[in-house]
Amino acid sequence: MTRVLIADDHGVVRKGLRLQLEQYPGVEVVGEAADGREAVRMAGELQPDIVIMDIGMPNLNGVEATAQITKRSPPPGVIILSMHSDEEYLMRALAAGAKGYLLKDTADVDLLRAVEAVKQGKSFFSPTVAKMLLEEYVQQMSQRGVKDSYDLLSAREKEIFQLLAEGKSNKDAATILNLSPYTVETHRTNIMRKLDLHSSVDLVLYAVRKKIIS
Image (tube, rainbow, N blue to C red; front, side):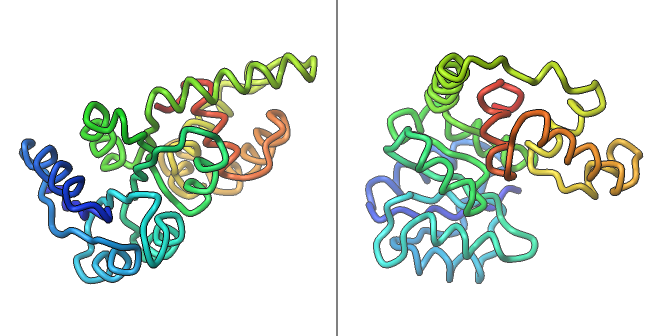
């Protein structure tokens, strides 16, 4: 059973999300929070597998609440609900530890797919967000007069890149690929250098642009 906590300051939205989620077997809504501080407290008490978090929460905004919630061990998967499709908001959400980013106007279509993906340890982003990121990336590449470097990665580096983009640790990737953590860290360093990436958030954004993760 996937235990879900809903955090949104609008009661009508919470009710709608609950009704949608509870249509599906294997999903249980264990609580509802009306502000960010309440979401942090309830996440600690209820220990949900997934938190659906509105980005614009009162008392403590959704990004800061997410940062506090994801510090727990093991952290729940947080899916951000947002009206904003620009990269700045997405980067803040990812930096706080969110695994999913859904636009409110398409949440009714994407919510269950997002929950399923995050439950499996993967990331999920609204298709509109992924498309926007790709278009911005292509435009930046054109303006800078440079080519995409993804094909410079070896087959092994591409394997490791996807696992890291899905949120796996170096240790997890090493176990899956039967490699040492040191070898994975060496590959990660080479991947970041080849793709001109500087953080885990950059890595995830790049993977979304390239449609390596959804």
